Length: 131
Image (tube, helix red, strand yellow):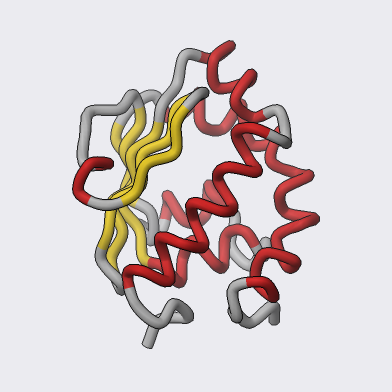
């Protein structure tokens, strides 16, 4: 069973988190610098998320072309942000299936450090476990 109650819970959480990532943490500028956009295809619960330097979209409208596409479960999202699984390990074990220029993804990882630090606050806000 997923840490997310349902797709709506997943969307509310991801919209809140990614708006912080793009508009407050400076990641939007990094994404613009590297020329990337992301489409996440999520399972358990199912859903879509699209992010670019100026936009955060969930739902069917997020099922659009992006530079990088990642397919993963809601629990894998949660584990990644809690630093329980690294992106290289998740890619190697196919917990995350990615299409697109993966070196661009890996180059952006250091910019995510501030997000890892505040992630537990978002978990508490949305009723998710932090351990």
